[in-house]
Image 1 (spheres, rainbow, N blue to C red):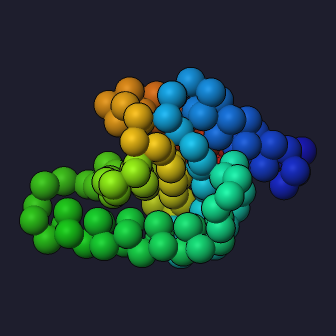
Image 2 (cartoon, one colour):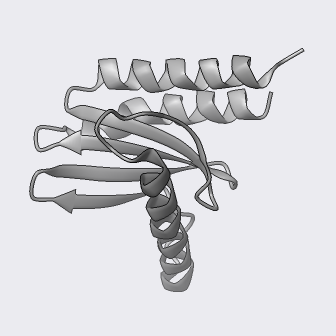
Image 3 (cartoon, helix red, strand yellow):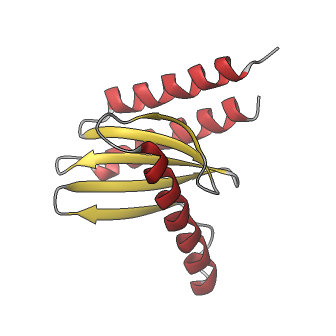
Length: 126
């Protein structure tokens, strides 16, 4: 039997792994597509607020991608003066937020995050 604690631990392990494998990642958040926080590895940030704002960004990205007819949304990237916020869809009902400093290699993140998204999705549907 899979428990909520087991699922949360599996997702947190994936967040820690992504943070360790990709230089420049400073925090991660997993939430429902409606903005409800599931878990986070983001010291110094407000994960509940990040989850809600990322859900809005993901929704806007999905609507925009549908409107312009370029296929399903892969991610939303927000570039800031001191870093990045990247929001990935995790299936249709969840999202992954990756916070990164100005040294984040976004292409490397994209390569590493594919497996992370797949494993998080599998853990959440277990």
